[in-house]
Amino acid sequence: MKREFNNRIDAQRNVLNIVNKLGWREELFGLSAGAIARWVEANQIPAGDQLHAMVTQAAEKLFFLANKSQEQITGEYRALSIEVADLVLQIEEIARAR
Image (cartoon, rainbow, N blue to C red):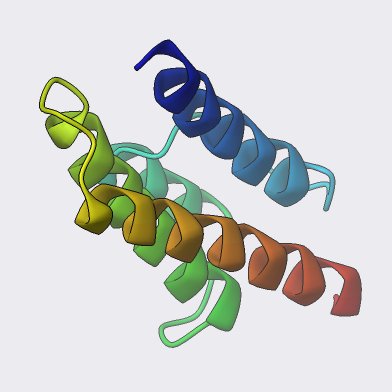
């Protein structure tokens, strides 16, 4: 259970580090809906931006994992963890292309 928690926290940290390396006017301070909305508004990120979409997807999946972390680890949890890892890689690729 602790390993899954650490993996989730590491994924959140990785997303924030990748995004914030791009030197925005205002950094992304967290992966809550409010933090993402603030980041989008402060940096005038256009609607439909691919990085914004990937960050939002990762945040939603991480939120779901956080809610499931108290339950027994299931195949669904593991599959979602893999999806999050893939999203982090996609975010990294998008960030490199900017």
